[in-house]
Length: 380
Image 1 (cartoon, rainbow, N blue to C red):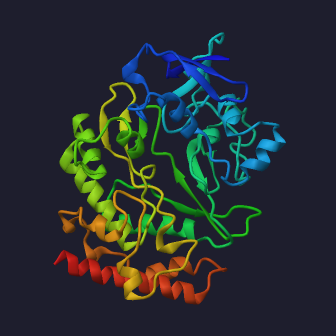
Image 2: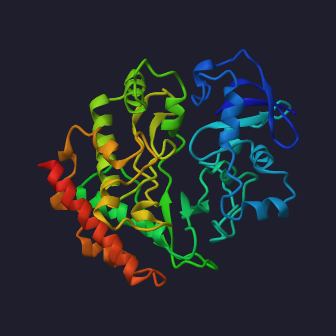
Image 3: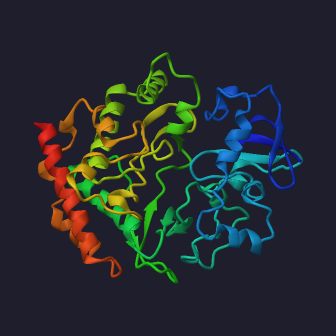
C-alpha cells in the first residue's frame, strides 16, 4: 500500500506499508528533505525506525484488549489506520489515491472520541472525527488524549492501585509555581471511573497547530556527536546550531536537573525532554515545558531511606546517577531553596490517596527533606 509521508500539506517522500502497517520501503529521493523527521537521520534505515518508534507501546494500558476488540493485528496497523497522526507534530500518511488535506485530518482542529483510558466521553453529542491521536501516544503508563471544553488534554493514570504518579505530577506543578518558573506543564488531579486508584491527572497539550515538539531523542539521533562529546553537550550544541538561545536552554536544563533531584525523579529520559519548533519557520523556540515527572519519589518501587541509598540514586537521563547530573550544573541559583515546597505540603498531597500507607508517606517526606538539605549545602 502506497502512502505519501506528509508534513501538513507538504509531501516529504513516498512510502510503502504492509496491510498491517509495517513500513517496507520508501523513496530515497526526498521531495522536501528539510521537512523530514529528525529522528534517526544518521541511520540508513531511519524512516522505518522513526515509524516503528511512533507506534503506541503494546504494554500501554488496555491497548491489547482494544486491538483484539477492533480486530487489529498490532500497534502498527492501529497507527496506519489513523494515518500516523499525532498531537505533538504534523506528520501523517496520505494514501496516494486520496484527496485528503491537512485541514481534513489534523487533530488539533478536528474532533476525535477514542479514549483508551475509558475515562470519559469526549465532547458528548458532537460529531466525532475518523481518527485518533492515541495510536501514536508513547509510554507504557495508561493514558489517553481527550477533548475537554474544546481543549486537547492528556489524561494519565497510574501503575497499580496507588495514585502516586498522578500526585507527583501535581506536586511538580506546585513546586514550579512556587519557584516562579513558567516553563512547565500544569497538572491537576482527576477522578477516573472504574480504576483501582483514587486519582489520575490531566494536563493541557503544550503543542498546537503552530508549535510542535521535537524530543531530545530525535535531536540526539539526528546527527553524530563530535569526538569526546557527551550527549548533554551534543544536545546543547545542536540546539544552538538551530538558533536556540544557548544560555536560556542551559538554564532551563539546569533548573530541570535540580528540580528532578529534589523530587527524586529518576526518569528524565530523552523522550521526556524536548524543544518546541515553529510550524512554519521551523525555528527552534525554547525547551518544551517540563512534563512527565510522575516517577518521582520512587513511584512503583521502594523509597530510598538510608543516607547511602539517597546519595547513590540511579537515573535514566544524560547521566546514570543523580551525582552525575548534578555535576552538569553550573549555576545552583536557578533554584531558590527558600521557595521550595514545605515538606508538609508533600505530605498533604499524598494524604489525598486513601490507599497509600502512612509509613510510605513518611519515607517520601524524609527523602524530600534530605534532598533539600543536600541542595542547600551544594548551593552554598
